[in-house]
Image 1 (cartoon, rainbow, N blue to C red):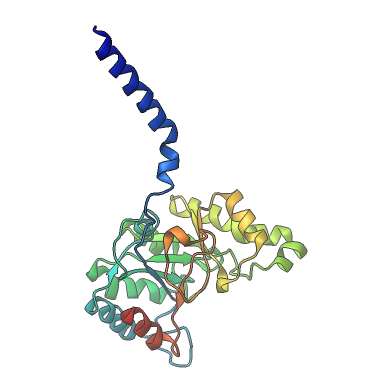
Image 2 (spheres, rainbow, N blue to C red; image 1 turned 180 degrees about the vertical axis):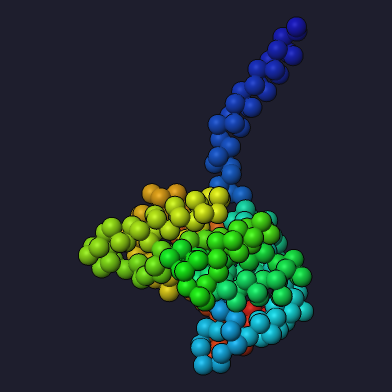
Amino acid sequence: MNKSYLFALIIFVIFLNLYVVSRPLFAKNTPAFQAKAYILCYHTFLGKPKVFTDFSIQEFEQHIHLLKKNGFSFITLKQLKQKQYQGNKNVVLIIDDGNKTAYEAYYRVLKPLGIKPVFAIYPNVINKAKYAMTWVQLKTLVREGCEIGAHGFYHLYLKSEFAIKDPKGFEKEIVHSKQVLEKELGIGITDFIYPFGVKSPEAVTLLKKSGYTHAYSLKVKPVELDKEDVYDMPRYMLTRSMASSILKTLIQG
């Protein structure tokens, strides 16, 4: 091996080592993930105009088709978290509370369009309340590719006062809800949807300790993933009085 070749090889190895060591520094300068998404929160589909969070299945279908007509794509929560989307017209649907009309809405409106929502479930009502879904129905939705998030056990406000006055009850909302959903459905639960959008420092601490990776509150803003606190992800709650203006805001960008 001649001296010039050996010298060049040594320089190359030194440069390679410097690159590997400094690579994390370069990575910090990579462009931020620029795409946006909107998480929309629905509840029931009873068709009762006096219930402010309720819509008929026909109204729900109109919302979905309006968004599709205006170029929106419906992505899953998994796609959102893994940044598997582009542009500014992306929607994730989360349907809270496990009402049996959500099961019907999925099959009548969402499944024909290939849309997979998230169902936010508090286990206390499943198989018990007449208005709620059954475990069999939830298992069917999981097989369909829908995602499940924990929504408390009794659907209580997770305020600091609750954590202080009743630490066991507070823990049950976060920890036991996860345990029951995982046992009954045979899946891992890593997403928590705050009941009423209410969070507290104590809730966040317990969520992290319990194995949740993301949690969702209620805020009128899009998801800009690289800027978000993953334990305070924003959702738009659609109500009868606000649905039109929210959808208009999304469409206008």
